[in-house]
Length: 154
Image (tube, rainbow, N blue to C red; front, side, top):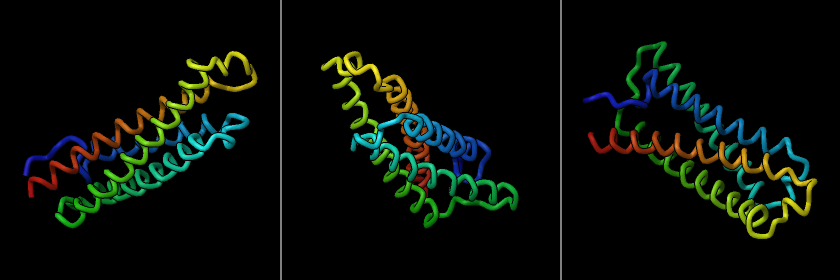
């Protein structure tokens, strides 16, 4: 079977999972650094979704490290099926959270000028956190795509 970039048990797969962890953690860190993110449901959902993404990606990164050290092949149909389902679920949750948070910030910053009127709101930090969440989603979408093609090749 041809090895795809980002396959489980490869250096590129490990790099992709570490990048997912890093961007999800950065999104959480920036959002948590604001004073009143918890008053907005969409932002709380973003934190929960990025937390789940962080745990999923970290677990798979650990599995990749194990496979690389022991020179094990992680490409069997049962394991890849699990990866596909997990990646697709976390990808959909991440996209939904990022889009809902982006909708809130567009409403406040652009449509209502709420961020300008309420200078104490850290709208820029909200935007940075949302951008990081979208980058996380792009990375998990790449993983999902690779996993789907590996599963289809069995």
